[in-house]
Structures are given as structure tokens and as C-alpha cells.
Length: 341
View (spheres, one colour):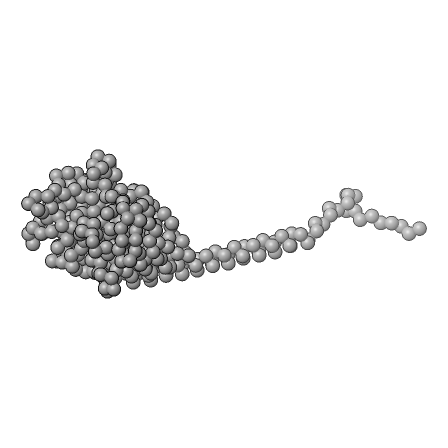
């Protein structure tokens, strides 16, 4: 019988079994594939983000700019460090009229869009355009005429002189391009206190969902007083802000393209307003617009003319101290109606 030799080391113990080389090699290969795949995804996401940023920067950069002079106010300590934008509008032309960015001409819409220092709340303060005010170097006149007299810079000075609020930036809306904006948003909803007709459209009492053309008819109703038309413009502005904020349309890639194009066609801003500041404002409005407080500066009529009412000084102070909501609770009659006539 042949002698059998066992495989032992010098101590007589069996040598340890060699591990199976197959699985670790497969695991290492799988790990490399996963890491490469993740790297590819990260690179792809980076390209998408960079492309998105480049697109947004391009679109925002195409917004019309106008030179505006801002004078720094000497405000006391404790004044809000939030952003306050003076918002005006190009007068709405009759049906079929042409639009264009506004740099001068009387404005029926004068609003202060204020974002609180914490970026979590804010308000929109409407100033009646026919309010008689002292315009620096031009004497007494209706506030809306300051724009026609000296352009955006004079209007900024007039509003700052009236309110004591530091204006951060200036913006103007061209409501003649409102149709494209409303359509890009998928329509907006406004509420009316009674049924009315305009431009071949019937707007029922209560909530009305408007497309772009209907929104223009809503804003152009010729039977309205000037105050009524201003309220309509305020209502549309409010509806647009609420839609942008509620549906996150500027953060959704599927809707951002159309919305940005519509915004750039209807907006004019001061030349100091950088692309990054506009993008930052859009982000802030997304969190503020839905909960913003809307008030109208109180006026009193004397000799057939409107003048700021005594309690308006409390409103200006409220803006400077991020307390517009508190002012509205104390003075509910100043709350801008959500259902304009």
C-alpha cells in the first residue's frame, strides 16, 4: 500500500485554509462601480445646477434696468435692516395699446414691499397715488406726479421724505405684459364683491380664476374710478405674489423657465439691483408673500384733496420696526381689501 503523507507544518498542525479569492474581488469591483456611478451623478447634478444657475443669471440679467439715485437716511439704532422696495407700475394702456418699460409718467400704483430683517415675514404698504406731499425741491404735489416730474429718483426721494423709510431698491411693473405673466403662472385667482363685466368678460361675485387675457380685462375696466383701478392693480400684484409663493414656481425647474421669461418682460428695476440680489429676493418672497400683511396708508380729505392722516406716522414707524402686522391689528380699517370693487 502506498504511504499517505498528510499536509502539516512543522508543529504538526494543519495549515489555515486559504480564503476564497472570488467574493472579495467581486465586492471590490462592485464598490468601484458604485463609487464611479455616484461620482457621475454628482458631476451630472453639478452640471445641471451650473446650467440652471447660468440660465437664471442670464434671464435675470435681461431685466430692464434704469438709473436711480438713492439717498441714505440717518436712522436711529434699532431700525429694521430688512429690505424695502418701492414698487410702481406703468399705467395700463387701453385694449390693443402697446406697453414698454416705465421710466417716467404718473403711476397709479405706489407700494412699499417690505421684507422683515428675519426674512420670515413682511408686508405690502400701498400709498394712495393722489396723496398731496412735499416733494424735495419741487414743492407740494400729488405723489404720483413725482415720477412724471423727476423720474424714479425723485419718487424715491419723495417717498423717503414722506415716510422716513430707507428705500433699498426700485421696481416697476408693466401691467400691459401681465397676460404672459398670468399664463406662465397657470392663471391667478381674484375675488370680487359683486358681478361685473369688462372687455367682453363677466366676472362673477366671489372667486374668479383668470387667464392672461381675462386678467387684462379685469385690470382695464373703464367704468372704474382711479381708486378702483389702483385696487385692481394691487389685487393682481397680490394674486401673482401669492401664486409664486404658494406653488413654488420659481424653485420648480418645470415652471421656472416660463415664469422667469414672463417676469423679465414685465419688470424694470434700478441699475444697482444685482442679479444675485434679485434671485435672493425671489427666494425671500417665496417664504413671505403668502403670509404678508397688506395695508393702505391712511389719508384724510381736506378741501377736496387727500393728505396723509395723523396715524400714518405710526405706519411708517411700523415699517422701520418690522411690525406692519401689529399696526394692521391696531388699525384694521387700513387693511387693504382682498376683494376690490
